[in-house]
Structures are given as structure tokens and as C-alpha cells.
Image 1 (cartoon, helix red, strand yellow):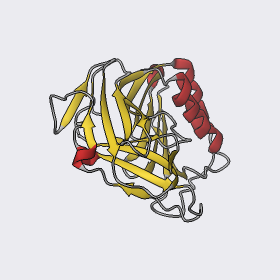
Image 2 (tube, rainbow, N blue to C red):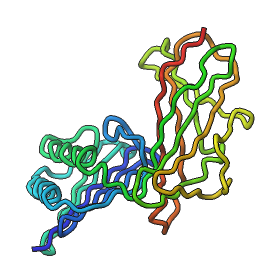
Image 3 (cartoon, one colour):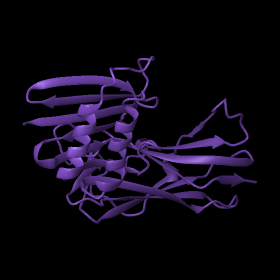
Image 4 (cartoon, one colour):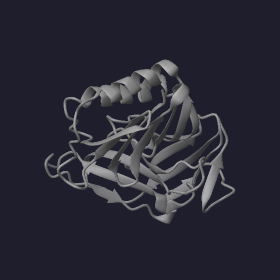
Length: 261
């Protein structure tokens, strides 16, 4: 008996997930953007491995799901596509991602649980990021340090972090009404951007060996209104077709609350 399955999701511009389950317990998934709570880890790239028991469990759950297609009502809403094939017989379905129907919801949870836990350390070529404050004092430049590293087993390629236009800082004032959801994109000026280590390639793509890392500093020098802000940093790695080592998508890093006096 030959049996395969595919689960893919789109949950934002440049943000998606693809999982393939194959014979012999083979699996591969590609992550193109973290979006908590679905994908809390701040990583991009490709995972691959073999787990006969885990793949068999997911194949059985997907095959046994009788929930008919239930796509999201709005065309631009997040969705998940599910495909299953057994001995040449194919079945395809489409569901709303954040409002999964009752018959599909436990299967979706099982897929995410496997990706978040059991298979998370099967990294092949991945890019991981973390951000933290170096300085937050009002009389000093408020500086964010971002570290990009490769925790995978192979070289990973990504858009050169030396390109200032790939970085975005977003400030959300806590005093605004929650329903307003007003955000303040902070456009980073050239004098507010610097690399913590030199790059051989300032444009195009940059490659990082397993276990290696590189740092970026973002310095917010402009005046901000007094108050407390939720702050996040986004980095965009542009898509490069035909390069399996290239990690593309958007990484979103949350920082500790910034208080401006």
C-alpha cells in the first residue's frame, strides 16, 4: 500500500507552512514565518527526517478525518489545505486555519504538536532569531540587538541582513484602546542600523554554516511620546526559487515592554 499526505497553510503575506508525509516514515516541512500560537518558535527553513511511528499516526488521523471542506468566508483569510493519497485514490480539502471545524481541529492540533515537539530538532537548513534590548534609557540610544543563527545540520542561505530595508520595528502604544489596534511602524534610518560583525555579501543572499551566527543592531534615536509600548522587530528573507538551502519568509521577534518617561 502506498500512502502520502500533505498539509499546507497560509497565514499572512510571505508567511506559510508546508508538511509532506511520505512512505517509510519520511517527513519534510518548510516554515516561512512564525505566527504564535501556531508557530511560536522564531525560525525559518526546512526540517526533514524519518519517524515511522509519528508519520503513521498522522497519516491515520488525516485519512480518518471525515470533515468536509470548510474554507474561510473571506478570500484573504488564513487557510489550511489538506491532501491525502492512498493507492492512487486522492482526496483534497480546505479549512479555515484559525477557526478549524470540529472534525479537523484535533488533527490540526496533532500536526502542530508533532512539528513543535517531536520533530523540532530535525532541522536541516534553518535560520533562528532572537532580539533583546541593549539600552532603553531615555538619555541613551535605545538599542535592539538581534542575533541570527543556524541551528540546523546544513548550510542555510537567506537574504543578506546587511540590507536595511528588510528590517522593520513596530511600536504599539499600550494606552490605545485595544479595538483600535493602532501601530506605529518605525522606519529605520541609515544611521540607526549597524552590523555587529562584518558580512562578505552586503546584497543578495548570505550563507551561514551550522552553529554559526551573526548580529544586527537597531538603534532608535528619535523622540517617542511618554508611555509604555509593545515592541516587535520583523526581518524579511526574500524568496529565491530553486535553492533548497534558502530560508524565506518573515521572522517576528517580540521584545520586553519599552517604557518612555
